Image (cartoon, rainbow over all chains, first blue to last red; front, top):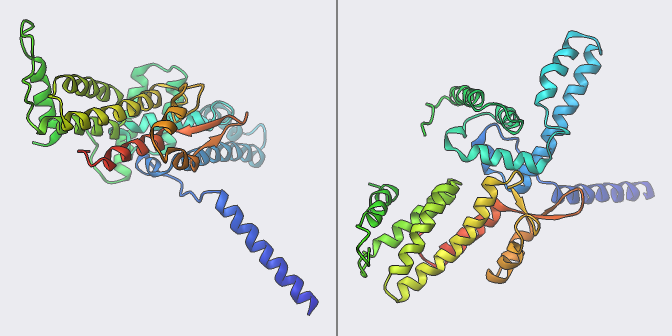
Length: 154
Length: 159
């Protein structure tokens, strides 16, 4: 009987702790494109941005572990993917601000978030405007294709 | 023709008067014109277009100067004051590298002034404030703009 009481007490405390944790951490549905990103509150955008950067870095580190330090996969990751990682390069505040500015243009709303982040990082790094515009046009076409909508004109 | 198109037709006409005319606008402005200007401000803010917003705000201020004294002008001026605050936050949000959030360092005095001028802002924004790694409290520009737009809607004025 005592064991049952202890078990019930432990279960109740676990439920309370879980509820408290839920109350402080927003449940976020990952945004696929600008439409979904702009629907999030600022707090959700910030939490998501921090999580995205951390998750991206974790995934890159797993590539190294799985493929081996000297493998082609690891060198590809180092050469291309690490360049587009936000971790250590910009804070969550900056990423949210950059994406809000990027998606403020209605023509960009269908661009997938991953592409938007890469384009914003190139913009922030001072890449030439012609290349940026080409990337944006391509991303708009891909975004419109993935959502089966015509490309929005400005 | 929607409101925005009408605004683009009417607003240039307001300025298209010879320089020698002392009173460029008639004292009696059609009742719909302030509504069109406020709609242009509302739409520019909704689209986060700070340049279009600044242009519409300049036109709105000019119109407030030439409107006849009365309750309509008073209401219009109150809306402009709120839109001025929206404009300050919007401009910062669109031009600063960290524009999604502000504090006293980035927009000096803004938070205190919003608390003083708008009852309920402090409670509203408390839910959305965050702290950075150094413990600095930051307030989101997006929710601040939403709150201020709500203040205009609560006045019963045109959007």
